[in-house]
Length: 132
Image (cartoon, rainbow, N blue to C red; front, top):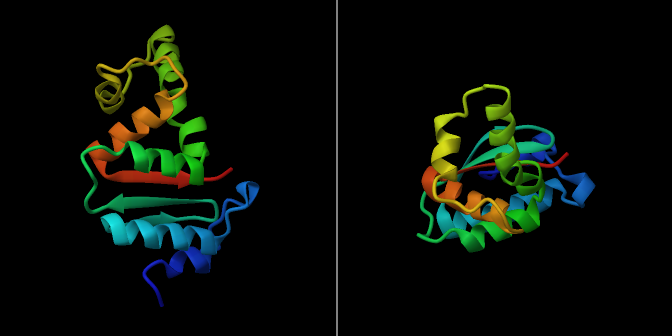
């Protein structure tokens, strides 16, 4: 059994992006070599990753994550500005960790999602991957 056998057993995939379990294991193996990786929750189309060490600038990793799993940015970090706006509009409190992540950030531009992902990676060393 390999370190990432649960991905194969669960058949975790992003078939809508032509990402198969073997592709996920290959990517995790590369990241494990570069940064050290532990996986947490593993589901049929999602998994949680914790990195041991990351570089000071996580921009390249964020871009790599986006290329591998676009939903992380397209359905996640790209939506933060809208989430804050809606929360404020409806009088809901914005979580402190979101406010901290957005602090000092220009929320315009095409790369806002990958910039926020890079900042989150550096701060938390955690990543949720999902394909749906």
